[in-house]
Each structure stands twice: as structure tokens, then as C-alpha cells.
Length: 503
Ligand SMILES: NC(=O)c1ccc[n+]([C@@H]2O[C@H](COP(=O)([O-])OP(=O)(O)OC[C@H]3O[C@@H](n4cnc5c(N)ncnc54)[C@H](OP(=O)(O)O)[C@@H]3O)[C@@H](O)[C@H]2O)c1
Image (cartoon, rainbow, N blue to C red; front, side, top):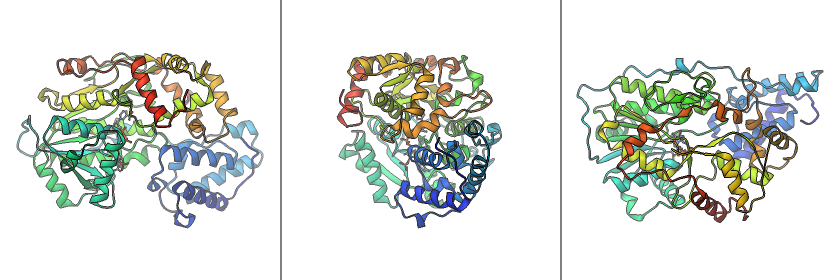
């Protein structure tokens, strides 16, 4: 950390406004110091860059989540100014550097509250093999694009897609651009993909009451893939889209007529330390949430619990828990902005990977989407959960060896050495790991563990997918092996689109 100096609240405030405006490419005057920071919608990378720059300026370590634990810039600047004063006046270097401003802990079980009014209407649910109208969230995202594509292939239904856009045309274009970006668009799809303007964070999904009721009356099933995937924001900043948005989806499912909800959860619901080394099966109930650190994972835990509460009340649901979702096994197309791709790119640029006991538990997006759509069409899936993780995960070290074998010079070094290189040798934001540093290095809880520590094999549950594979038997849907052919498909795409340099 650079030399410390005490900054006043107004200096920090001006600095934050200026840098937030730069990140958002707007004028500093457009930043309102009373506006909640999450309203500005920074993605993980922009948020990490702001944290890194703030640390550099202040000269002490700042928790990435702190930026979203103070309601607005005015209050955050006040807190940082207090910290800056302490650091600038006599707190020793060692003390100051170990000072991390930590958010309060949450009781997640207390967050599981589903409005009493969300319950089935009087008539009972009848499973329909054929559906005419589907409502889908997350259609402008990675998995959502593949689910839309699969639904268009496997059903004759029209798909009403919740989309954040200024008008219907912009919404239509946003959905089309997304499908095109994953090489999935066909002109003939156009009339069957119908944008619905709205926002998961808002009551009634930001749709007018009449529009919401019209959908509730006419839709036959719901696929809820939308969520804010941000590994930096804390729970409160993600609660509206990920938890309250799920509640609104359940409201739609229960209004006028019962319709099944196919909810895209995540294996992150098992991130509690209580499951370390334990076998978890699809239909196991899970109560533990202690030790789930990421706000995103916390919202997935609460979101899934709401879906289970709805199921207990009689709303038909299926729960799909994907692991890390990798690219399309046929074309290699993937979401280059996702965390794992950024880490791989950063490690290749650094020339080294940490030698850690990780399993590469990632499933190709085409497997995940095909499985979700197939399972959603089976009557006996209702009320069940499915695990879509890779049936034969590979050790991360195999991936590193493979990267080396195709010409990228990388070595495996002890984890502590890798961390030290991250701190001492990276000075440029050209390497994606530079902006991820606070996130990768921050120490949490009494155990003082980092986020990467959480994914060590010894801390992971053993997630069984036996019942899911049984349910998929006979469907022809098989998860492609994580072999050199698949890795070649992925790397060819990443090199071709310029994300990775030529080996
Ligand atoms: N990717 C993974 O590795 C992974 C692993 C396990 C589980 N999952 C789950 O799979 C689902 C899909 O993930 P993904 O990888 O497709 O994520 P993604 O590419 O980031 O897409 C997220 C989608 O949610 C939408 N969304 C976010 N906030 C919204 C809001 N306030 N209102 C309306 N829509 C909003 C986004 O719309 P905009 O385009 O407007 O932002 C986008 O369409 C999520 O539920 C995620 O938790 C993903």
C-alpha cells in the first residue's frame, strides 16, 4: 500500500463521484451523493476497479463489499474519512493494513419470507404436456439465451421475455443481439420471442398491473433464469432482483391459474461450511447458510428457500442447480466476461496458476439448457430438484497442464507464492486479475480465509447428480466429457475472438 495520508470527507466524496462518473462514462455532476450506490448498476469488474483505485488513493485496504454497505456516497465517504484519519494519525502500518472494514453478518433464515397471499388459487394444477405461452426471465443473459433456443426447438410456444429496455423495439433488439452473440439467432424465431418490459427488482416485475395479470392469466409455464450475478455486491444490494424478483415470479405463478415455475438456482446453495466434505443429494433438505460469504450466493440460498416455501404451499416448481456454466460444447461460444474466464486469462498473462486442490466442476451451457428444458417437460419432475454439475469433473491441474501443452507457458506455483505475485508483480489493469485482487485476497471470518480458499476440495460438498442422470436417462442428453477435444473447442473460440492471445 502507498504512504498513508488523512483525507477529509469532502475530498473522498469528490474523488468517489469523479471516479464513479468515469466508470459509468457520465459527467461527475450526474452523480448524486444521496443516491444508493447499487442504483448505478456497476458490474463486478467496474466495482472492483473502483475498490482498487479507492485503496490506492487512501492507502489502506477496503473491503469490496463496503462500497455497497453504506447507503450512499455521502455516508460511505464519512466512514472512509474516519478510517483515513485513524490511518493517517499514528496507527502503525501493520495495524492499518490489517484493518478491513467488514459488513455485518446476516441471519439468512430470517430473510425467507414469502408473502402469505402467494398461494394457489382454488382449482388444482393439471400438468400440460403442450404449452402455448411461456414466460421467461433472464433471456438477455448467457444461460437464458440457450434456454430460449432450446424452448424454440422443443416446443411450439411463444416466449414472453422479461427485458430491461427503454421500449419494445429496444427490448426486441436486445434479445436478438444476445442470441446472435451466442450464435443462436435464426430469423424465423422473431415472431415467437415477445419482449415484456420490466425489472426483477420492482413489484409486479415492473410490469403494469394489467400487463402482469394478463400474463398470469395466459402463461402456461415460467422459466426463471434472471438474476444479478455480481460477486462483489453484498446481499442487500442484490436482494431486490434475486430474492424479491423471485417472489414476484412466484406471485405470477399463483395468480388466476397455477403454472409451474422452473427455477434456476445454483450449487452455491451448498456453500455453507456445514456441507464441507458431505454428500448432498438432489432432494436433501438444506438448512445451513452459515459460512456463505458471497452476497450473490446468499441471495441464491434465500431465493431457493422461497421457491421451496411456494412448493410447500402447493405451487408446482422444479429447481435446477447448475454449477459453473461453461461454453457451448459444439461451438465453444461462452460468456467471456465471467469470472472463471477472467481468472484463466489473468493467470496465463501472469505465466502461473496457483497449485490448488480444485475440481473443475463446470458443465457446458448446451448440456445445462437441454437438461432444464427436457426435465421441465416431465410431469414427475414437479416438486423435485436437479443437479446439473459435471458427472465427471476434472482436477483444475489437468486444465493447467493442458494450457501448457498447447503452447501457453504457465507454471504451477504454491498458492501463497501466487498470492504474493498477485500483490507484488501486478501493476497494470490490463491483467484482469489486477481488478479482482481485493476480491481474491480479502480475508473473511474468524478463520481468515480468502474466497479462493472456499473452493478448495476439502471445503466443498460432494454433490451427487445420480437422480438427475436417472431422470435424463433415455433422453439422449449427455454431458460432454471435459477432455482435450472440448478444451480445444473452447480455446479455439477464445483465441479466435481475441480474448486469449495466440499461443
Ligand atoms: N453462469 C453461471 O456459471 C451460473 C452458475 C450457477 C447458476 N447460475 C444461475 O443461472 C441463471 C442465469 O445466469 P447467467 O449466467 O445467464 O447470467 P447472466 O448472463 O448475467 O444473465 C442474467 C440475466 O438476468 C437479467 N437480470 C439481471 N438483473 C435484472 C433485473 N433487475 N431485471 C430484469 N432482468 C435482470 C439480465 O438482464 P440484463 O441483460 O438486463 O442485465 C440477464 O438477462 C442465474 O439465475 C444464475 O444465478 C449461473
